[in-house]
Amino acid sequence: MNGIDNILSRISDEARQKAELARREASEKAEQIEAEGRRAAEREYARLVQNGEEDAARLEARLRSASDLALRNRTLAAKQELIDAAFSRAVEKLCALKGAEKVSVLSRLAANAASGGGELIFNEADRTECGAEVTAAANKLRGGSEPPLTLSAATRPILGGVIVSDGRIETNCSFEALVYSGKNSLAGEVAKLLFE
Image (cartoon, rainbow, N blue to C red):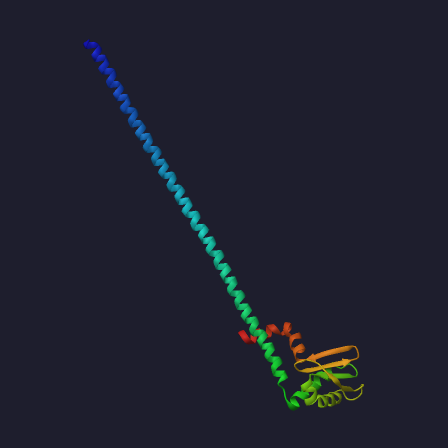
């Protein structure tokens, strides 16, 4: 039985060695798989971090752009308010004219606007204050060769200036109409004066 014991012992030793070899190979394979998994996870982590940083940079650029646009819009709105205020101030200054200066400005406006005869229409205060003077001065500026301008009994709710009415045709030379009709063409010049 000694020979059988030796054979069994050898078979047992070989089985142990094979089992140990299989265990070592399995352990090495498991370590390789684990290492490959770690490398794959690190690559995926790096990719996700890079994508996150790129997304954050794009979001930051969009937010900066939106912020810059909002700032430009607020700046433009503020500038527009100042330009509008300048035109309103121009109307106020024209309406504040007094005496001979007012008569001179209104009579030139009326004389230049009249193509023939017609009536001069003022606001109530200007009609009372200087309507007759303006009418006489406008007729004098026109040289008297055309039908004369007359002072209308009617008034209009204008801030200042004059309306020349020749039948169905009216030429609005009110200060507000004159100033605001030139607003589009003058806004650039006013902006240069205000903001440079």
